[in-house]
Length: 568
Image 1 (tube, rainbow, N blue to C red):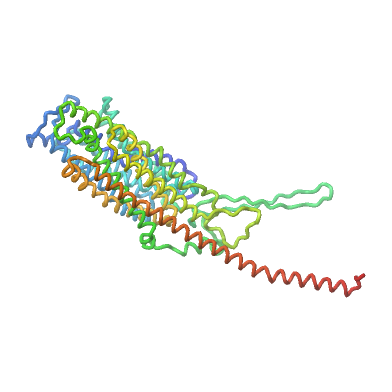
Image 2 (image 1 turned 180 degrees about the vertical axis):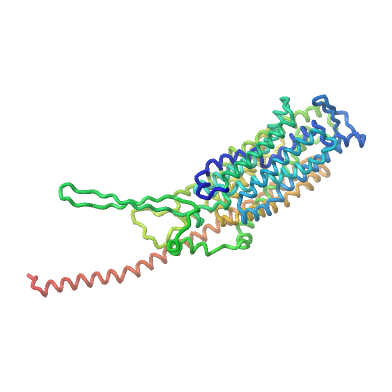
């Protein structure tokens, strides 16, 4: 039996902490494919292709008294499986977003954890007879990619339960997703210590079953409403405090109001629904096409596409870039130089892999920027006719503050991206470690910025569809990295300078979104000032007849006293 929204609201911290751990261990783990590939080759996956095609290389891997040959055909087949899994990891975002907006996160999370558990079980089963069961790796990586994106996507709506710190929690979810690339490198460390690969996969499958059980017990059937949603209500308790004056015997009754935030579950009475202003807001539903065609979403797609292409090209061509920095384009390197290339590329690749955990550490920073001064803002559903005391300072407009925070976050992220592009142009190998840090930070920041912007600007029931559509378009645009890579290793002879320079210039288009956010915020501020002036003028018109009537009443009273003989 699924818990209610009110029960889930009380368990929101448990759900958030477990979701971060589950994302770290079971979401986009395929991004650590390099480490998994080594273990699959050690276990003999598709090694029979090497003996069949007689293209066995001199390097032979030994593990547990098995001699598994390695060849080009084997690597091509395994990389084909990775291509399928990574494609599902990106392409499934749009249909998952539509399904999540319609049915909520619970069923998708249950399906995702089941698929991930099945993928680990398939890999473990294949190790019993790799020559016959190697074909299961295609189903395993497909289930792994689909299950991982299900877990990631469903966790992105959970921050709606946290009100003013929603963007901070969202950035932690995205950071754990981006940091999951270190999972397979961590598994390889355990594997190198002598633990059976088969045992690791069976334990991992059991861990995914625990994710299924946690979702079944704690995640509600309904989607998580945003803080401004009508399913959030305020419970008001009126209590009376009676005090008695011991001298005069007079009694005084003081009314004390206690207000509590409640969520969902409780059904309002008909009179409450009629009196509640949120019911009138619920009738005004924003169509999805309006959100998709809005300038903010379109410019965010442009920004995400450019940034994704820049980041993915660096990840795919990083080894070749490092190799060029060592050889400096020497067409005939010596054997000593080749050994240095292998050593340096391996060393810096391990540094880059270990830095992926920075996403989990640095993403809360951008979430803090997105939540800046949100507690000082007035409620969006506050009545505009409420009289405010002159002694209380005016609160910030929530919508304008959200746009201001998003503007600052995107400017900061784009500045880091441009700095990363500049460092990539410098022919200095140790300096590239700094570019690794910037690459990792930008990869976590850009997703957190985009997710926080969608959560702040658009309705909660559009979040999944918009995020899925943006992810699918940017993933398709990032396929351009393959022809860029072929251009670098072909006509440019491995020199990445001109491609990095072109991508640096192209990445400047990311500042177009902050420019539009600045323009949109200025229009909102003008509209609010105009509305305030109209409200003040209307209140002055309403108060002027009252002032005139009070003066007439005072004059009549004075005339009455004079008529009764109270004159000197």
